Length: 222
Image 1 (cartoon, rainbow, N blue to C red):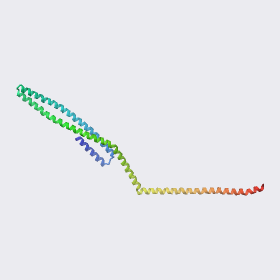
Image 2 (cartoon, rainbow, N blue to C red; image 1 turned 90 degrees about the vertical axis):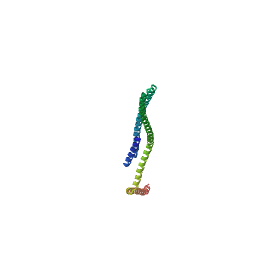
Image 3 (tube, rainbow, N blue to C red; image 1 turned 120 degrees about the vertical axis):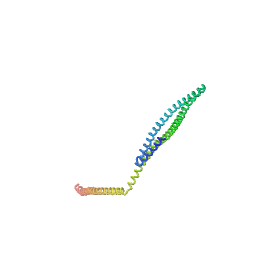
Image 4 (cartoon, rainbow, N blue to C red; image 1 turned 90 degrees about the horizontal axis):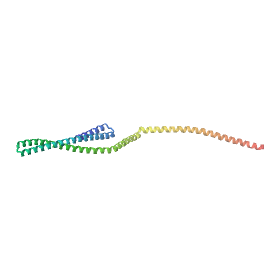
C-alpha cells in the first residue's frame, strides 16, 4: 500500500532525525502514535473512496450487462423474423457492450482487491496503534526511571571525586576548629564560675570560725 509504505517511511525518518538530535523518547513515542493516528485516518478515508468507486463501477457494470442482454434479445428476434442483417447489427452492438462489460469487470475486480489491501493495512495499523498505546505508559515510566538513575549515578560519581572529598575534609576541619573554640570559651567560663563558688565557700568558713569565736564569749557572759 502506498499510504502505509509512506507511513513507514515517515516514522523511520522521524525516528532517525530525533535519535540524531538525542531528543526525549517520550516525545518520540507520542510522535509515533500521532503519526499512526493520522495515517489511520488517511487509510480509512482512502478505503472509503475506493469502496465508493467500486460501487459506482458496479452500477455501470449492471447497466452494461442489461444493455448487452437487450441487444442479444434484439438479435434473437431478428433471427426469428428472418432478418439476419438486423441480427448481425444487434450482435455487433451486443459485442460492443460485452467488451465494455469486460473492462468494467476488470476495473471492479482491481478496486475490490485494493479494498482488501486497505482493510489489511488498516487492521495491521490498528493493531500496532493499540500496542503502541499499551506500551506508551510503561515506556514513559522506564524513561523517567532511567533519567533518575542516570542523575543518581552522576551524583555518586561526583561525590566520589577527589574535589568533593577535599571539600568535605575542609568542612570537617572547619567544624573541628569551631568546636575547639567553643570548648575554650566554655573552659574560661567554667574557671570563673568555680572561682566564685570557691569564694563563697571561703566566706562560709570564715563566718563559721567567727561564730565559733563568739560562742565561748557568749557562754562566759552567761
